[in-house]
Image 1: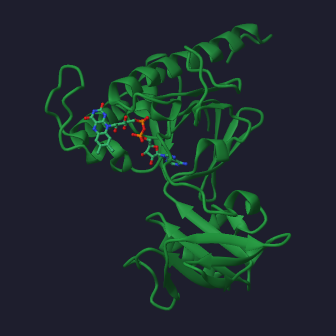
Image 2: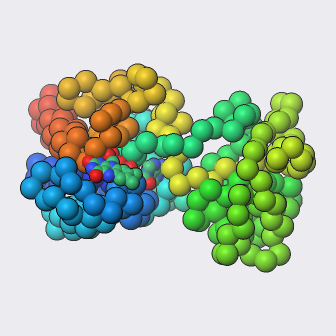
Length: 290
Ligand SMILES: Cc1cc2nc3c(=O)[nH]c(=O)nc-3n(C[C@H](O)[C@H](O)[C@H](O)COP(=O)(O)OP(=O)(O)OC[C@H]3O[C@@H](n4cnc5c(N)ncnc54)[C@H](O)[C@@H]3O)c2cc1C
């Protein structure tokens, strides 16, 4: 199915966008990590959300999610690892592809800094997705940098392909298969020539052909490199339109204040703008449909 609106991120901004887009009778797919993974879930007490002082972050998120479900939004759980803006928008989660006419980016703030060498070797040995790129490394030594909950599973998948896997993380995850070698390290650097040859972990070189960096979230600018930013945030106008036609953004990803009320308000505006974009295009097309 091709959705009218695809929302990336299931936090307050994304869920608000989903509710507003459904209110305009658009089909909506929300793609994101678990709603419990929003940073708001860690707020023990939220005192500044209008009308609901003293609520916990978890309670708010639960209500937001239920509301979006009741309005008829569809949901896909998982990390978006690639995004293509061509003939609409195509998002990849694992090996599944999802299509939409418009896109609302609501991924929050992706806080992890890049490792030295990561950007330089992206696509030349550095990958964010074992499921997508694993076959390219069949029979070769690879390092998995495990920063997400599903990283042990991805490491097991690489091993099943015949890769010689080393798992690198600050702490050994309990879900890691016992026969996958683990290396505890914090400071990482990726080195190579034309392609990756080494992961340097706390000063120790690990020879490898591929480095799979598996984080909970991928920055929107890594997903859509043509997206314009301002001061590290996605640049938007007052209709929450980004520099790419058909792409809107809302919430923490557009900059401060990093607050729920702002995220919810921007989610609403982004979705209404996406609906307007679709309606205008429908009216302009010869057939008159969206
Ligand atoms: C401890 C704490 C306390 C806070 N207390 C308050 C408070 O009292 N009042 C207040 O107003 N605000 C508070 N905040 C801030 C508030 O949580 C944020 O402003 C709000 O959550 C922003 O919503 P958002 O939808 O923009 O982003 P987020 O809530 O960050 O949601 C984005 C979601 O998208 C997911 N995502 C990102 N990239 C991808 C990807 N590539 N694939 C799949 N999923 C992806 C993320 O995992 C996340 O679940 C607090 C924050 C923290 C950390």
